[in-house]
Every structure is written in C-alpha cells, then in structure tokens.
Image (cartoon, rainbow, N blue to C red; front, side, top):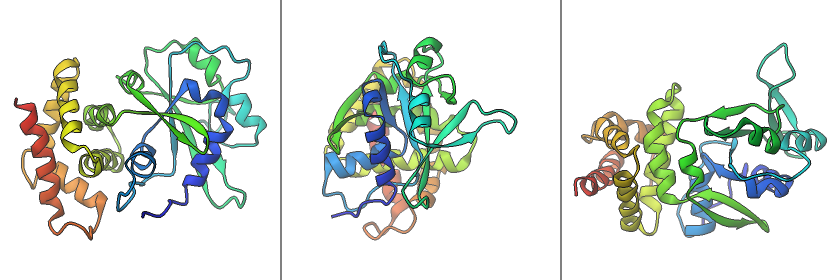
Length: 263
C-alpha cells in the first residue's frame, strides 16, 4: 500500500477550509493523478506527486454566496505571495501547516472566455487568476470524489489526459512540460481500465475541435522510442523498480494510443 505524501495534509486543509466553495471549483493539476491512485483506483504501487502547489479551476456556475475565496483566506490567515513587489494585489494564497515548515501555493485558473464578474464573485479581485486556453474542457467533464467528508470535483481520467496532451506544448518552463507528460504517462500506466481510457481519449480526439492538435503533439513527441517525449518522461520518472526498460515502456504506451488514433 502506497504511503501518503506529506503535502496531502495541506491539500486536505485547503479542501476543508474552502468547503463552501467546492461546488464552484474543480481540483486540477498534479494532485489529480494522486487522487485517482489513492482514492479511486487504489492498490497502486506508487503515487504520482511532483508538486505541492494546489490548483483549482473556477467554474462558470452562478455564485450566490456573500463571501469570496479571497476574503475568506485572508480571514483564515493564509500567507500571500504578491505578484508585484509594489502592490498588495493581486496575490497568490499560501497555505502552511501548524509548524510552518510545509507550505503550498493555492492557485486559481480560468478559461479566458469566463466572465470576469463570475470570477470576481467566487474568487475575488484580490487573488491572481491564471488564464489557460481551452481550460473549460477540464471543467465540462468532471467526477466527484469524497475526501475527508468533502465532495471534491476533479476532471475525468480521459479529459485530464486529453487536456494535458493539448496544452503541454504551451509550457515555457521545460520542467513543467516534463511534469505534464509524466502525468499523462502515469494515467496511461496505472489506470485499471487502460483500454477503456484509451478508447475515451480516442473519442475526444475524434469529436473535439482540438483533437487535431492533440494528434500533432503526440506524433511530434512520441514518434520513436528515443523521441523527446519518452526521454523527458524517463527523466521525470527517475529510476523505476518495476520496469527494466522504462523508456521502451513509455514509448509502447503512447504507441498504443497512436494506434487507436489511426482507426
């Protein structure tokens, strides 16, 4: 049974702190594979955690609450990372454990097409909002998982992979690009229903307007075992006690995906 990642207690703290806002938020980013492995798939030999930051997508649901996330985390005493040295806003909330040793940034992401009014009502004007193209794809296909008695929304397995395969090429930071590809590999490798997952990704590529770009990205990075994709994932994964030829395994899993795409 895999061990719990120490940063999870920060995730649980944030989930409990933001309980009233969870219907309007979707947990995204590097914690998604971790949640699947520990809470949904179970019995996975190792957990995918290469981040401590906690990312939430902001939905388009109408918000009727009177308090924003910003005013709430300020009241709770969250730390702040100021985006500009000479201004107090916008800021990124920072959650810490009781000792102050563990800490993580809590970031909020929205699609550029989402109404600023909705974002201001839910998150507040004081918090920095990151905008990602096609981000609403993640928010339109979600499942709900109970974590510490809180109902947390996360993207479906197939949409999480599809969106990563669409957007990883936009990363300016090579380290973040590697992490995105690693998360895709992790999902393809450890999902208990691998063929079903690949089939659903195939349908997304076929039916979504962005599918052509996903095909191009896969072909560019995974055309061979020594292509950039397998090499980057191998670097991010590190030594693997379960697989002798990790790069070959990475290539084969993406090859299987490409074979489905040719159908």
